Length: 83
Image 1 (cartoon, rainbow, N blue to C red):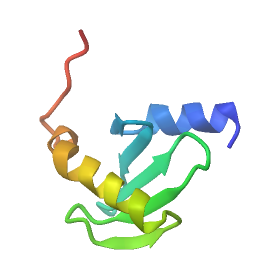
Image 2 (cartoon, rainbow, N blue to C red):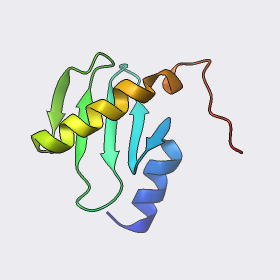
Image 3 (cartoon, rainbow, N blue to C red):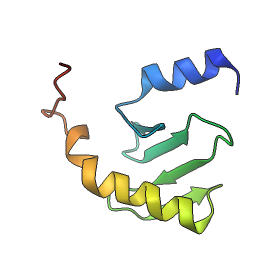
C-alpha cells in the first residue's frame, strides 16, 4: 500500500485501534485493515463471524479482541471525544 491508500483507508474508517481500521460496509459487514506492513485484512460480521482474512490465527485473535473491547464506539450514536 502506498501512502495515499493508507490515508484513504484511515479517513474512511469508522474506528482505528492500534493501527487497525474498522469500517462498516453497506451490507453491515466489518472490514478491518492493518495500515502498517504487512497490511493484513479481515471481513467479519458484527458478531465476530469471520468470512475472509489474510491474518494468521494470532493476529486474528488480537484483532477480534480489539473489536470486542471497542465495538461500542461504532454504534450510530457513539462517539469518541478528542482531547
